[in-house]
Length: 189
Image 1 (cartoon, rainbow, N blue to C red):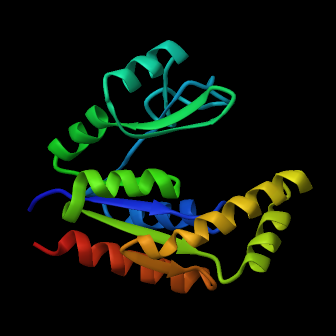
Image 2 (cartoon, rainbow, N blue to C red):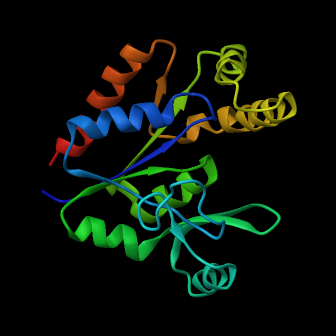
């Protein structure tokens, strides 16, 4: 069976990481694409596990060499990206690869892999429910929440560009739908 890629994107607070982690409990044939960044490790983050930590010079060199499937500069010289070599190594090892990326990066990866890729957008039931989730997390200041909501509005406008949309209004239902959707794609010859 040939290996495939799954690209997942969603506004912050929609449950994307929860759904990906749930899926990976059931599928030992999936590897997570570890992003590269030029930021310093936080807390107990480990190189090659949480991120591939690169210097700014190394990151820029990889950009110049066209080594990324996608990359983004979020602000003030902070970069994140998906290295082709790392993903190709996982695929060659016989694993399907799942990505957790923003909507722009998702489109680039989908273009690169074509029919070998499934892009899935995780959608909140509404912007108001997303606001409530972000406020309940109590990890962000009010102005950060407003920034995340503004970004979410843009991301929601991109949902129709994805192959599939999973609405996460009930987590248990979303988990079942997500696992079924991904498994159907991965198990299809």
